Length: 228
Image (tube, rainbow, N blue to C red):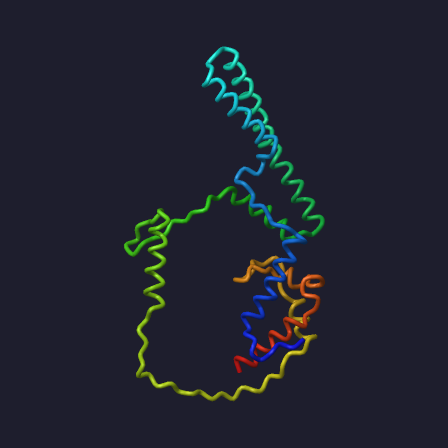
């Protein structure tokens, strides 16, 4: 089905983009962000909760039995944590070896970079006009508001004469569906997605998501004709 000439390009792409995201959500699910303690698993979480309960019980009733129980749980928790910390690098190196053997380049380089950089906490600090750091959220928002206000609200000069420039560019024919499909197949993988948050792998694996390249091809033609 061809795109109607009155349909906006952004609206058409928004429909395709949402279809991709919905299909990806139900087929792949969400990716859970890794904690800064990757070795901290469910067993560690249970021991940590038991330690908190034992400490709370001792605070409510500081008897010798509760104190001994708290110390035993503390020793067991520390011993389990040390074991998990020692085993994590070994398991991670085995995982890197498997990714290298199976040629999972993206996962391989991600694991190597995690080893090299280690844990790096996120920083939301912003400098103000004087170079001082801002940490409070509303001060950061005010800083960005003032910055973009100065950047975008520029007084336009109405007296500037608009000159039409004629170029001698050759008439480029519309791309064929085959050329569009070839361009999609040549997209580089393992790259960060753009503003639409859709990686190239999803567009390339369009079998069940887009059904065909016809929608993207028609959208491309409509955008080119609108610009022209």
